[in-house]
View (cartoon, rainbow, N blue to C red):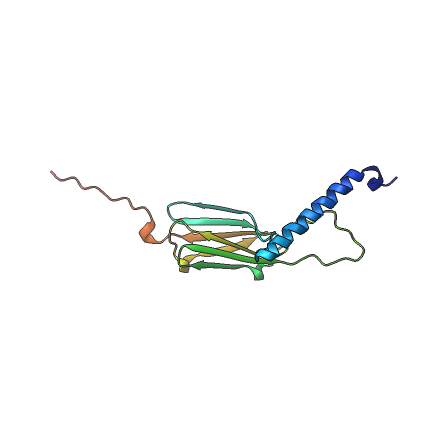
Length: 146
Protein backbone atom coordinates (compact mmCIF):
# COMPACT_ATOMS: atom_id res chain seq x y z
CA UNK A 1 0.00 0.00 0.00
CA UNK A 2 1.43 3.38 -0.95
CA UNK A 3 1.89 6.22 1.51
CA UNK A 4 -0.70 8.24 -0.44
CA UNK A 5 -3.31 5.49 -0.12
CA UNK A 6 -2.68 5.10 3.61
CA UNK A 7 -2.78 8.82 4.36
CA UNK A 8 -5.32 10.43 2.01
CA UNK A 9 -5.87 13.26 4.49
CA UNK A 10 -2.20 14.33 4.12
CA UNK A 11 -2.63 14.47 0.36
CA UNK A 12 -5.70 16.67 0.80
CA UNK A 13 -3.81 19.01 3.15
CA UNK A 14 -0.93 19.29 0.69
CA UNK A 15 -3.38 20.15 -2.10
CA UNK A 16 -5.07 22.84 0.03
CA UNK A 17 -1.65 24.26 0.87
CA UNK A 18 -0.76 24.37 -2.83
CA UNK A 19 -4.04 26.15 -3.63
CA UNK A 20 -3.32 28.68 -0.86
CA UNK A 21 0.14 29.29 -2.30
CA UNK A 22 -1.35 29.88 -5.75
CA UNK A 23 -3.87 32.41 -4.35
CA UNK A 24 -1.08 34.26 -2.50
CA UNK A 25 0.98 34.37 -5.67
CA UNK A 26 -1.98 35.54 -7.75
CA UNK A 27 -2.91 38.36 -5.38
CA UNK A 28 0.73 39.41 -5.23
CA UNK A 29 0.93 39.62 -9.02
CA UNK A 30 -2.36 41.54 -9.23
CA UNK A 31 -1.21 44.08 -6.66
CA UNK A 32 2.14 44.56 -8.37
CA UNK A 33 4.04 43.00 -5.48
CA UNK A 34 5.37 39.51 -5.27
CA UNK A 35 3.63 37.56 -2.51
CA UNK A 36 6.96 35.96 -1.74
CA UNK A 37 8.99 39.08 -2.53
CA UNK A 38 10.31 39.70 0.93
CA UNK A 39 13.14 38.55 3.10
CA UNK A 40 13.83 38.79 6.84
CA UNK A 41 15.81 41.75 8.19
CA UNK A 42 17.34 42.81 11.46
CA UNK A 43 17.80 46.58 11.89
CA UNK A 44 19.48 48.26 14.87
CA UNK A 45 21.53 51.34 15.63
CA UNK A 46 24.04 52.82 18.02
CA UNK A 47 25.46 56.33 18.41
CA UNK A 48 27.45 56.10 15.17
CA UNK A 49 25.46 54.11 12.62
CA UNK A 50 22.38 52.15 11.62
CA UNK A 51 22.98 48.47 10.83
CA UNK A 52 20.88 46.27 8.57
CA UNK A 53 21.31 42.53 8.18
CA UNK A 54 19.23 40.47 5.75
CA UNK A 55 19.03 36.78 4.88
CA UNK A 56 19.28 36.25 1.12
CA UNK A 57 20.56 32.71 0.56
CA UNK A 58 20.82 31.66 -3.06
CA UNK A 59 20.88 35.23 -4.35
CA UNK A 60 23.61 36.04 -6.86
CA UNK A 61 25.81 38.86 -5.57
CA UNK A 62 25.50 40.59 -8.94
CA UNK A 63 21.74 40.94 -8.55
CA UNK A 64 21.98 42.81 -5.24
CA UNK A 65 21.27 46.53 -5.33
CA UNK A 66 21.56 48.74 -2.22
CA UNK A 67 20.39 52.35 -2.57
CA UNK A 68 20.13 55.22 -0.09
CA UNK A 69 17.66 57.92 -1.10
CA UNK A 70 17.44 61.33 0.53
CA UNK A 71 19.70 60.18 3.34
CA UNK A 72 16.78 58.62 5.19
CA UNK A 73 15.53 55.71 3.06
CA UNK A 74 17.26 52.41 2.31
CA UNK A 75 16.17 50.22 -0.60
CA UNK A 76 17.46 46.68 -1.05
CA UNK A 77 16.70 44.80 -4.27
CA UNK A 78 17.72 41.25 -5.20
CA UNK A 79 16.77 38.39 -7.51
CA UNK A 80 16.74 34.67 -6.83
CA UNK A 81 16.26 32.45 -9.89
CA UNK A 82 13.60 29.76 -9.92
CA UNK A 83 14.90 26.20 -9.86
CA UNK A 84 15.23 24.50 -13.21
CA UNK A 85 11.96 22.85 -14.14
CA UNK A 86 12.23 19.08 -14.07
CA UNK A 87 10.00 16.81 -16.11
CA UNK A 88 7.54 14.48 -14.45
CA UNK A 89 7.70 15.97 -10.96
CA UNK A 90 4.94 17.01 -8.62
CA UNK A 91 5.83 19.67 -6.08
CA UNK A 92 4.78 18.69 -2.55
CA UNK A 93 5.85 21.98 -1.05
CA UNK A 94 7.31 25.07 -2.67
CA UNK A 95 8.17 27.58 0.04
CA UNK A 96 11.48 29.02 -1.12
CA UNK A 97 10.72 32.38 -2.65
CA UNK A 98 12.04 33.11 -6.12
CA UNK A 99 11.94 36.14 -8.36
CA UNK A 100 12.57 39.78 -7.48
CA UNK A 101 12.70 41.00 -3.90
CA UNK A 102 12.51 44.59 -2.70
CA UNK A 103 12.59 46.02 0.80
CA UNK A 104 12.31 49.74 1.49
CA UNK A 105 13.21 50.89 4.99
CA UNK A 106 12.57 54.36 6.37
CA UNK A 107 15.59 55.28 8.46
CA UNK A 108 14.99 57.03 11.80
CA UNK A 109 17.78 59.58 11.23
CA UNK A 110 19.69 60.88 8.21
CA UNK A 111 22.77 58.92 7.17
CA UNK A 112 25.86 59.79 5.16
CA UNK A 113 25.07 58.09 1.83
CA UNK A 114 28.68 58.48 0.63
CA UNK A 115 29.99 56.34 3.51
CA UNK A 116 27.45 53.48 3.41
CA UNK A 117 29.08 50.05 3.21
CA UNK A 118 27.47 46.77 2.16
CA UNK A 119 28.92 43.26 2.34
CA UNK A 120 27.45 39.93 1.27
CA UNK A 121 28.86 36.80 2.90
CA UNK A 122 27.37 33.29 2.97
CA UNK A 123 23.93 34.53 1.94
CA UNK A 124 23.79 37.35 4.52
CA UNK A 125 23.74 40.98 3.43
CA UNK A 126 25.16 43.44 5.97
CA UNK A 127 24.74 47.19 5.47
CA UNK A 128 26.36 49.83 7.69
CA UNK A 129 24.86 53.30 7.36
CA UNK A 130 26.92 55.93 9.25
CA UNK A 131 24.83 58.68 10.84
CA UNK A 132 25.62 62.23 9.81
CA UNK A 133 27.52 64.26 12.40
CA UNK A 134 24.54 66.55 13.08
CA UNK A 135 22.47 63.68 14.52
CA UNK A 136 25.19 61.95 16.52
CA UNK A 137 24.97 62.57 20.23
CA UNK A 138 27.60 64.95 21.50
CA UNK A 139 28.64 65.34 25.10
CA UNK A 140 29.20 68.97 25.87
CA UNK A 141 31.88 69.74 28.48
CA UNK A 142 30.67 71.88 31.32
CA UNK A 143 33.01 74.61 32.51
CA UNK A 144 32.78 75.76 36.07
CA UNK A 145 33.06 79.49 36.73
CA UNK A 146 33.48 81.02 40.09
